[in-house]
Each structure stands twice: as structure tokens, then as C-alpha cells.
Image (cartoon, rainbow, N blue to C red):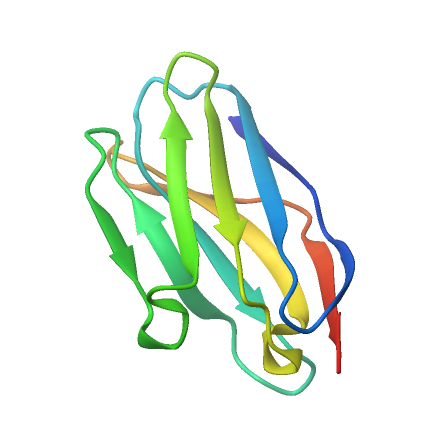
Length: 118
């Protein structure tokens, strides 16, 4: 079992920045892709950005150019730098990890609230 713990959420004004962190522990050797998702009340959880162990990244169109995902494999931490934040970025942000086991295992963190005021 792997455990994911997020930190770094909070309240920020529009145009501001935040950095989220996700620390992975436990059975993490088989984890390849890690990602950030977000969810607002009444909506489905949506992918924000992902990064593989090798550093390949993928971003949702609504964050391209504003958010940057990075990863420290030595420390088992994934970061997401969020710049030029907008009120519509307000959501609970969840860290996600996929273990390349048979069958695949998917892990989620507990979530961290990001609130952007206008």
C-alpha cells in the first residue's frame, strides 16, 4: 500500500500563486505516473496535470501556461506550481498515483482545498 499526503492549499487572491506538494510513502517502487486532479461540488473529478517517473508531463488545457508539475523521485514528492490563479481554479485538489502492478492500483490523497478570491 502507498500513502499520499498533500499540502500547500489555501486562500489566495486572483492572480496569485500557490505550490502544492504530495509526499508518497509506503509501497511506492511500482508507482510510475503521478497526477493532480481537482473537484468542485456537484462536478466530476478532473485531471489537472500528470507526470511520469521519467518526467513526461501532461496538462489540461485550462491550466497550460499557468501550472507546472514537477517531481523529485529521490524524495518521492510531486509538486504543482500554480500561477495566475483564477476564481474558477477554486477546488479540492487531489494527488493521484498509479502503481504498475497486476492489477494496477490507484491511490488518492485526502485532498487539499484551494480557494481563489476575486
